[in-house]
Length: 269
Image 1 (cartoon, rainbow, N blue to C red):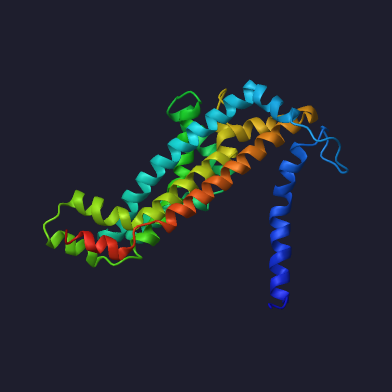
Image 2: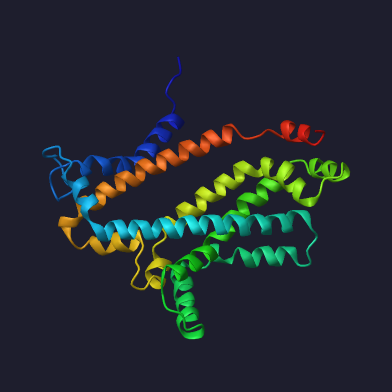
């Protein structure tokens, strides 16, 4: 029988502190009150019906999904190309290039948003839209994708790729038959991380969205109206359920990933 320890108690308290407020979100979404207070009143689904009928909220959700899916795909492709170049080729000034690409991680989001707004409106003369939001999110998310994919590309045996070249495979075949199966878990992680970062990002969207607001911009605009807050809680509960599903799906994909021995065996076939 395991005895409780101070470390275990600390871990338990930390998990409660971290996830307790998140678990309260679906609880209050079923409460028949516009105020987030205890004690709870009558159990109701009215806020979910209100959420389904809120066309402005649905449009904001669709906009966020469009941006997040596009950004995750673009950033993962760009991140894979950059990670492949950094790990497989000798580049002059490699450390400087990588450091330059990682700058969006350390620049404050407010400064980055203001700078992009000036570039888009004053220098390029473009109208603000979801395209400008996606462009800003790509700049922010590419470093995340690069870091994940660089760590994976440096983590497996490069002799597998060299053996495939020696056996006569082309560059495309090596990429398809050896590299991609080995880095597939990292690609899935990159897609999920970039999707989450873009879907959740507020400052860049607030500065670059114009009349087409994303979901975080819409939610922040609704916090001034208590009567609209329960519908936001209902939407947040649905997003939480979807996030749990995506994390579970990613873990299943990761566990079913092709092991290195299997990929090595395909070189012979």
